[in-house]
Amino acid sequence: MSRHKEIAEGFFNYLTGRRKDIAVKRYPICLACDKKKETMGVLRCSVCGCVLKAKVASPLSSCPLGKWDKEEE
Image (cartoon, rainbow, N blue to C red):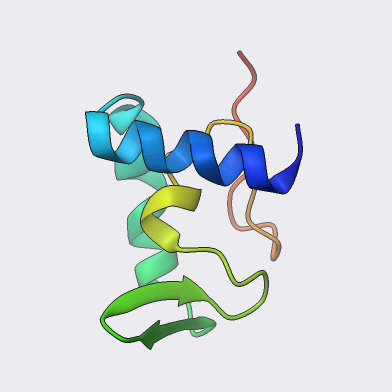
């Protein structure tokens, strides 16, 4: 899956509340990471540039630093 499709899926999941199970595990890890940055009120990963709330809700996404992996479906 392309990165754009992963993030689109992540936004869809975030907005609809789907896959909340993985997001609640991943998001605290991202919040504790020193590579997160806030831009105009939005938290992003400074390594990959992704919006964190969308990235953590996409099962096929993984952390570029290896802090969490994609979920096998």
